[in-house]
Length: 343
Image 1 (cartoon, one colour):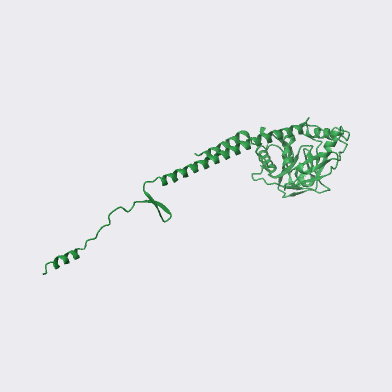
Image 2: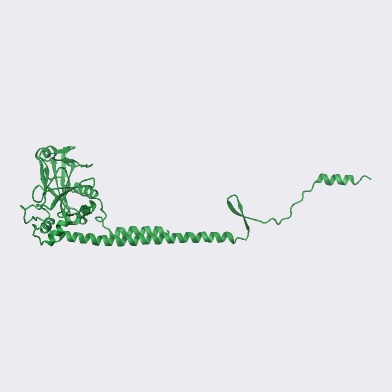
């Protein structure tokens, strides 16, 4: 095993040691798929249709709150549904419409919401999250259980019959805003679409957003507006206090940013170390190759035999020191002997 292969093995071991399964998740879509698969595996079949059940994720997904419910597709279209913070109005469209539909409600909390803030580049829009990211996804299901080959179902509403997201109801923390009747104009609703775009809209009521399809939603505000509120001492309605309450903790957003900063520093350090090891391995391999070529060159130059080119190949040849052979002709010798007998 050469040094380059050994370096690759060391890199893999370091990555597996320093990064947990949750840290390897970089795609929000991949996170949704993992939550879907875990929900299907842990879905309790003894629950009746229309009864919400909680799904407990592994410890490496701590901070994510999951609820699920199985509904008849026809009932969902006619009467709508309510699961967690999501109020689905009646008269919506379900495409395709299987016999049963499984709704999965997600609350990513303060720890995992930063994935959306980073992945959708909210800082590029000068916006910042002031609430957890809430998600609503729909999949097909069977009457007697869950689907073995699940696929996503499109739940589409209209402006008259939308999907309402009430951020004042936080099942993970049971906290509400201190001023539920006061609407803050600097807070907007953000919808994270599946094509990596972000759309912003006004609140329909204090801390209540409106959507027209399943997806992920959050409350955001301009970073300049939050800075002005800090300088003004909170006289504009307490945006910072409200965002802390909606986040469900004291300083949850700051703690999340601190974790992201520390994780970035650690990841950068590990990356620099691995890159240095890779460069050293490449230099060692190149040096060994140069030494081998030098030894071969010296072996050719110090060879005792004469080296000549035979086509495109160098081959040793012996010098021409042998005596050239003389070919004797018996007929010539015989004729000479006969001629000598004549007078």
